[in-house]
Image 1 (cartoon, rainbow, N blue to C red):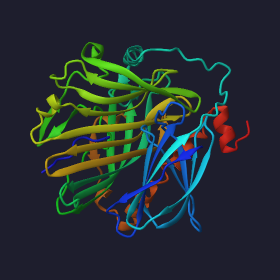
Image 2 (image 1 turned 180 degrees about the horizontal axis):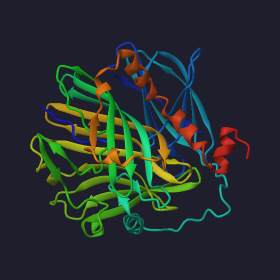
Image 3 (image 1 turned 60 degrees about the horizontal axis):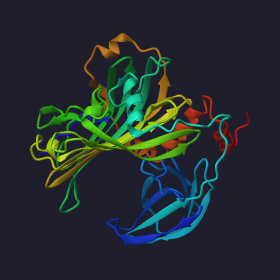
Image 4 (image 1 turned 90 degrees about the vertical axis):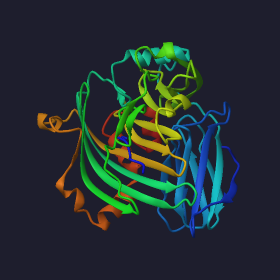
Length: 404
């Protein structure tokens, strides 16, 4: 049986259709790219409008992708917007029981966001070196001298799927109240919990601190070195894949691979803000040599996407952990929201174990969980509300209709 580990865890359109196990509903997949460079575009706003329904707003991940499930068949209007690019509109027909795929290629329309927008042309190794030089709490974020504490809410959903039948054999969801205190204290209190399926899953923290650390069959492991360790440049090869503009920032995607493939390590991508060398996110998986140390595990991957709060702090917004064995796929998705920065936290919070299950965790009813499931599609609304509490770039204010 699988045990979950500590988890934190326009332009031109080419629609295509494929078969999907969606019963009476439809699924929409979209991939957004820069029309000039073909680079994937993270944080693109994709708005789906249906006649007689409220618009559904989604934000692409760090790979420029979105996936919208449970859509009613029929005509849908899709609009993609991204700062520095021309907006795009298209209409497509969603078919019952099928997956509709859109390739969205956005045409650049640069907007001057700052008086000085020049960014140093640094190599991948230079960017990694700058990121490593910053004090950092594992893979969560770069240390900020002006941020000493924060609290946040999170919702986590985990499931185990039979790879042969695609049946969900186990699932668990829970809500979390999390607390961080510099330099390295993280506490998580579970405030609601629900199990379903044939198996019963144990509860794990919603945020994992490192994609190379976890527990399998009650045995802990720690793959070292990892790509952000102090001596990482001696053990890993880095390649700059692309650099894109996110708001008034420039974000570089860095490909990562061990210099010696026969040694345990991590493969994938790391995203870095070139303006202040903060960690924007990562998508990393264990290589074959590392998997040999984990009995029965064929695939181990952690994806983390951060969001910039108050135009200063990159903090976790979503984390996905995927584990595969020969027979099963286990996946956990955790979304963080409602950050309270530099809040006053009692010392007692960090004197208890990292994960605490509060008594009311077993007393939530179906109405409570239905509301939280709906929240997964409205995280962008909370993020936008929190962003408005701080200083937004001028171009963002213009796009949101805010007067200076």
